[in-house]
Amino acid sequence: MKVVMIHGQNHKGSTYNIGRMVADKISNGENVVEFFLPRDLNHFCAGCYTCIDDDTKCPYYEEKNRIMKEVESADVLIFTTPTYCMRASAPMKSFLDLTFNYWMAHRPRKCMFSKKAIVISTAAGAGTKKAVKDVSDALFNWGVPYVVTYGISVQAMNWNGVKDKKKQKIEKVTTKIANKVLNNKSVKVGIKTKAMFMMMRMMQKNNMGSGEIERAYWEKNGWLDKGRPWK
Ligand SMILES: Cc1cc2nc3c(=O)[nH]c(=O)nc-3n(C[C@H](O)[C@H](O)[C@H](O)COP(=O)(O)O)c2cc1C
Image 1 (tube, rainbow, N blue to C red):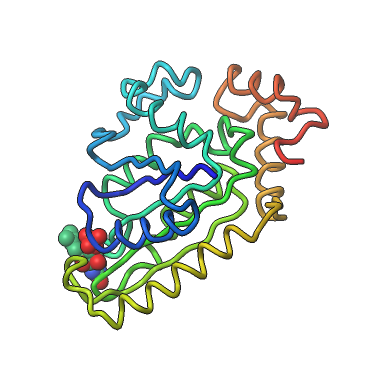
Image 2: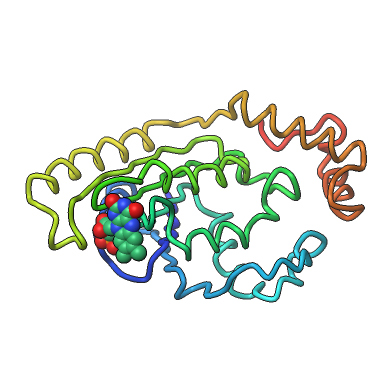
């Protein structure tokens, strides 16, 4: 079971530790690949749209590809982000912007439609709901059909500050999440994802997408015909 973790922060605070607990419970600490943002992708989207026609033309392709190669080969993705100003962290948001070409509106990847993902955020008080939604919305648009979210208010600025009682609760919840993900053997693509895909398909069919190269991608995959990225 390969787990790939994308951390929306460079430091190892509460969010990191909770994410790592889940990862270790899923994989016994083996086969876990981690990326830290901004350490591993220190850029904002330049808005040049070059990725729409050719991923490799993105000015940050090399760093982005290092991460996305691992993401594409993962069984389980774990995203962690502290809640900053009621939303996901800026480095996490920047990563999501840089992967917008993976959205169903553009060139979705077949492999995404069978993945499981977990999104975790901690806050001192409030805001985790919106922070995890920032990430889970993007994952929905990547086509990821199974996303478990966990937002928790830790009432602390770092992991050392989290009370033991809270840590015990986190221990229990992370075990539950890991078991839930492990026990789900066949991920099914839901009606919402299918509906979004069909809408995007119509858009491409009617030449209302972002261009000929994008349409050719859909055609080559057989999606304008009877083919679908799910089984
Ligand atoms: C820039 C910044 C913004 C923050 N915004 C919020 C917020 O909107 N709501 C909240 O409850 N806590 C907020 N916090 C507190 C953190 O979300 C909280 O301490 C979190 O658990 C930190 O996670 P970490 O230990 O992984 O860094 C903020 C902290 C920082 C540094």
